[in-house]
Amino acid sequence: MRPAVFGFGVAALLTGGLVWLSVSLGPAPAPRWTITRQVAAHRALVVEVDTSHLDEAGAIARHIADPVQPRFTEILVFFHRPGTLALRRRVQWTREHGYVETVYP
Image (cartoon, rainbow, N blue to C red; front, top):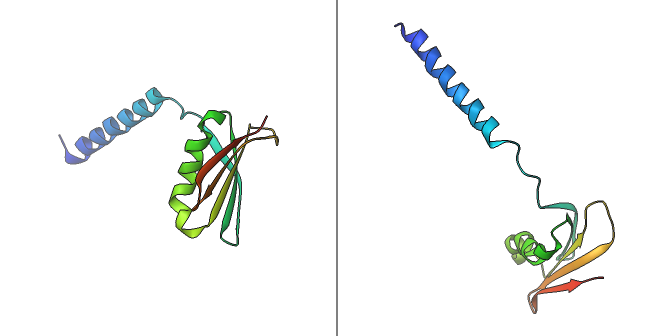
């Protein structure tokens, strides 16, 4: 067998395997939350998040705030359901009080 033919065969098998793998895994799941807006000023960060999983607000806020805490004195993360502007939860982080979650009716 000629090397060029052998190389083409190997490439075809690898490509076919990758296509099968991507098809078998299906589409990626929708994100559980999305940052829709963020503003920073005067060492404060304000982030707005859309999510249907409001019970995860504390964990989402930590995921957002933990990496940037050294840059800010206060971080506010506001949570809304997708497609609405009605405030449902707020998680505030400060150095003095840590994380404080407020639930709105």
